[in-house]
Image 1 (cartoon, rainbow, N blue to C red):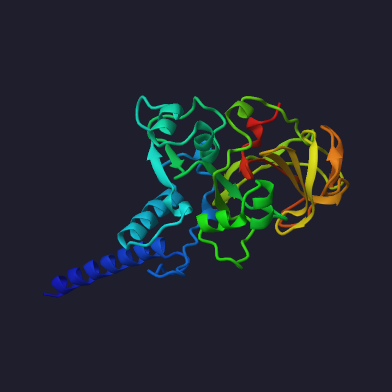
Image 2 (tube, helix red, strand yellow):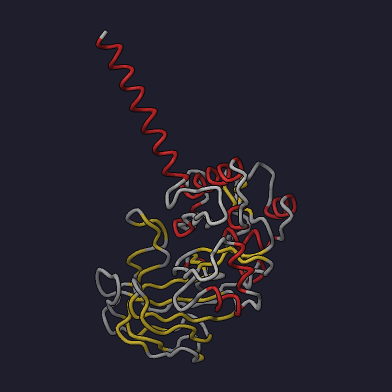
Length: 316
């Protein structure tokens, strides 16, 4: 009899834990309520570049979270914003990027941009691709940016972005959040990705590569350099940010062309100022140990349509 009650107790515990975990996936930020003011801030900052060639696996938490949330919102008859209508396509044998784009009625640049694909021939059956519900781009908000400045850059109304992402009128959007910008074409598209056009910012050993590190995504490469080492611009362009950024410390961001930026972080001294034009190979700062850093080094990122990609795929 005691064994009978013990089995019942174990079953109850298993059911309870399963239910709690399911709720945590659906309501990981705030409980979704069927109303006009529900909070649907998905964990966009945890995307962790599932879009890149090395992170297509179906097991990624963001994809699981996306599917469960979409099903929940749909079953509850809650109107979903465009960002919440993103879905996942699992590549089947014989499919290509072009056939997938055609089947989902999106152009090839939208598909490539949403998944940060830098090699068109590397997709394979079983890979997971994010499919946007409309033509547009996924854009990661960077230092010094907000919805209004991004809207101005793309020459669209800021309300279009807010409505697409269920962002209230006066809400301040945090740096690092991913938003969907509808009706705009990726500024760094298919043809652009065929060109390798950047140089290494420092002649030094790479101490940490792009990819998962210590349980989280490392969005650039680290160059092992001493404090005060000259750091060069990877390409010609205009400095769009030069200053302090939380976590990054003294940071410079260069826009080389629409849709292509590079970021240089943890510097001791910044030489290039916001608004200045710099040439490829020009010294723009001196390396350091500012911000969240475990020692002197340069953290270098390449950003395509504002989102980090593997820099080594874009260096000469």
